[in-house]
Image (tube, chains in turn blue, purple):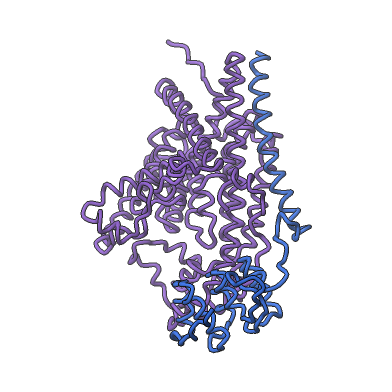
Length: 156
Length: 482
């Protein structure tokens, strides 16, 4: 009888272990998040710049920078994805988002107030059209209240 | 006179035995409290969502309009809308409203866990082990996670109401009056039609001679069910055959396509949807009517968490089947008790949940059946542990190992529930910062909607402190999608 009771008791005791470990784990993780919110387990390292955040597709980090002091209509010097090595362009964050083909970033920038009346931002629409990003084209064309004429591509 | 057959399970009266606090009850309560506290913390930091949340508020934003009390739409949730109306108009600020909306989701979850522990009332280490696995089944199931969506508290309110009503049916001290069951049923149904599951559960309890429910109560449940279904069906001529996209086999069919293909005779697809919801509770597959795990396996792209989900649910359901057969045999021989009644109540709850999801299947629609499923898991595991004590060494080791793996699998699903809740918080924030522009354009000219966007966007635009944990890839493969 003692032997019979022990096998059930031992197994039951072992079955408690995963539950206890899970409870401890979730509590420890939550406590860790509160104490060290910037630990790599809880948060990605902050991007070096708004351009980097947009290229990485980190829309939350990009938004945080835009909400801070970053002017989302100001141009930035950057090598765009798909551009030849060493070729640096002076473009707005909206153009960077289009070049990265990130619909979330484009939507975020429009929501945050990207000004489609600026020629630099209208260039983003032209870029999207040239690269065939139809969803982004539709979005930007609506924001621009139409599709402005785009300059012919420069000869190679 | 025949000797009473030996009970093969440790049948404990549902509210009998000692009422004093015992160590095992405390231990299980502490474990559940950890889980509940962290879950509450995540929900407390979840932004109020843009997509469905603002649309729901628009329904109640006009203080002079109570149109939501009329059953004019395909969905009818008068008490839910009334609670939202009260929360919105009584709150002094959008922040206060968001805090109230969060509490409206946290409170039912906390009450559910408390009632669950009280229902199981573990007294021994065997009970405690089974109870912790029962909690894991409750929290780790897809139906639970899918219902943890602020402000969609419909089924989250219904689940503790069902459990409370079920516990009342097991009262051996003076049975509760019919009015209390009626009140619980009206509350559950008033929040969402999934609450109708409560009615056949109470009727089934009465049919299996539960001590706390009378024939009068059962009659009231029948009356409420007939009246409500009649009221709703009187409006059904205006319903579309399919309200939302449906999963069918390995694909998703848009509602319009489903109507074109099956609109003339939708009963077959209705039956498929019902069976999908039931199967999702029992086997974690299909999800929303789509056999996504099976499809991944056929394509050779299944990841470990999919195997964990399928095996943990399948093995537990198999264990329940073993336990259920024993219980029913015992019940035929010696009469029904709380444990054997659970078999019937589980079957009834599954069938009712399935029937109510005839139009489309989603994980959340299995929420009401999840409660008896988790209680049954407690009983089944406890029975397995007791049976273990009479097994030979080899069998005992095998069964013990299987139970340990089962427990570990369900605990990983609990971890996924937490990560799923964190992901939802991050998704809500992301939606506010990306979709706000389009929403303004789409709903321009709707003054209440525009005003709600203005008032709620600050809380949604603030990055939540909770985000999905950045696990290594192998951990993500074990826990599930995030």
